[in-house]
Image 1 (tube, rainbow, N blue to C red):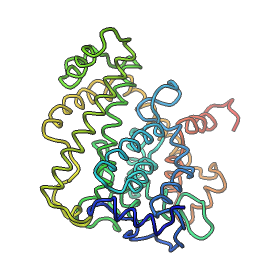
Image 2 (image 1 turned 30 degrees about the vertical axis):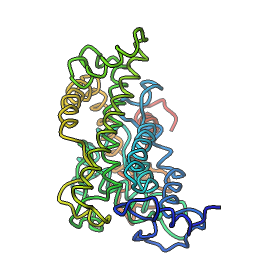
Image 3 (image 1 turned 90 degrees about the vertical axis):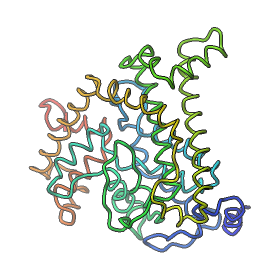
Image 4 (image 1 turned 60 degrees about the horizontal axis):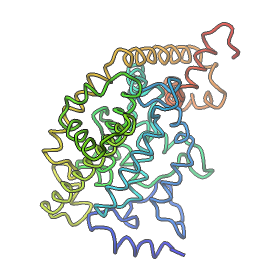
Length: 384
């Protein structure tokens, strides 16, 4: 049996000096006895997977609203893809794969129904009450809103996973400020890995979903150098290949070349900076985990294409605006008459205030649940 002592010995032998060792964790808010055969980060990962917030990701929008089709990615399938890519990168760089995986699995727990449009409207509705940021809300979920243990609120995760949730960033994210994590310095290398694994995952699965939906077409993508180069490689390797299989192979190789470039460039960065500890990595003025300049130049047109042709496609914009109207009307109706909220939710009002309780309640909804609630509140013949 691999016990805790042997896990620590394993980390000393196989993890790089700049990796975050579980036995050097800053610990948990509420002290707990160590588990005999799981590290702190393995326990964090397991707690996240068993949380209600994690299960709800299955029915939360990535780009396409859940009822539009079973094929499209949801927050849950996206999270699993991010976790898989992040573990591969972390293992290759000899970082702590368990910490990386825990951060990856938790990075979207604070997301609202209906994707980023839900976050935008909640932030607007809460502008006089602290606003809404999905990273900050993700921390609120794991620190307070999850109710799993009798001795403390939340999941009582380790400091490093909690920091990874707060300091997670992508081009869609707005910075959130949490005093506990507001000191100068970069996120841990494990967090930086999750950030870019997130980018790689949603860029490529959004291409897949965009093609499947017909919102973008392959003829447009062929004008992009990175797509055209890989398409040519596939054509040379497979003389006759079905369109669907060719699409899958192109996206698979797109992920592969980006992951390979990221690992190679990050390894070069680590050697150049002569990193010897996690603290040295956090003190760097720039992020250590990065693509090469050549890959950044190849990725830029692809990301600009997605922003223009998919995320700003009129059908996606319509879905987004419709979702904002749903959430705004739900929010206003609950705030005006909080007695409509479930009894357990109402009980939190004296401590947290009406608007924050309503915000928490809506943010925790799945797309389907939000739509059902809307019908119950506003459709005259719908059962309440």
